[in-house]
Structure formats: structure tokens, C-alpha cells
Image (tube, rainbow, N blue to C red):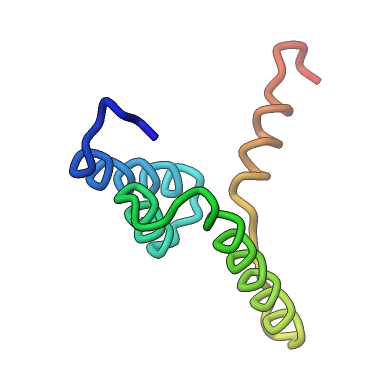
Length: 96
């Protein structure tokens, strides 16, 4: 909770921040903005976060299993965050 921000400001800032971060990471997922709005508007409390995260894990696991059953489809095809981490470690000042 941010008591200095009223509900309107939190509800406006939450999806803007979430979508900006996910765009920067290369993993745009519009329902994440809706989830941010729901939690920022106090529609759900922190006690609901575990159920929400469990649902996200089930959805991702199901997508990975179903899409990897076929040789023609692979999910995920790339991990932008891993490429960013590798680039960060490979660009060390020592030249290694």
C-alpha cells in the first residue's frame, strides 16, 4: 500500500509501470496490466496474490507442455531476458 497515493493514481500508474517494464523486457502480456489494476484498485488483497501466482504458473506450465508436444512448435522460442543477462556478462571490462 502507498497511503500517499489515492486509488485513482494507483490505478492509473499500475498498468503504465507494468506494461513499460514488460515491454522493456520483451515479454508483453496485456492481462498483466489488468492484474495490476485489480490489485492497485484494492479489488483484491495481498492474501489473493498466492492464488493469482498459482494460476499464472499453471497457465505457463500448460502452454509449455502443449506447445512442446509438437515438433513443429516450440514454446518459448526465445528468452529476451536471458539474452540481456548474457550480453551483460559478456561485455565485461576485462574483455573476457
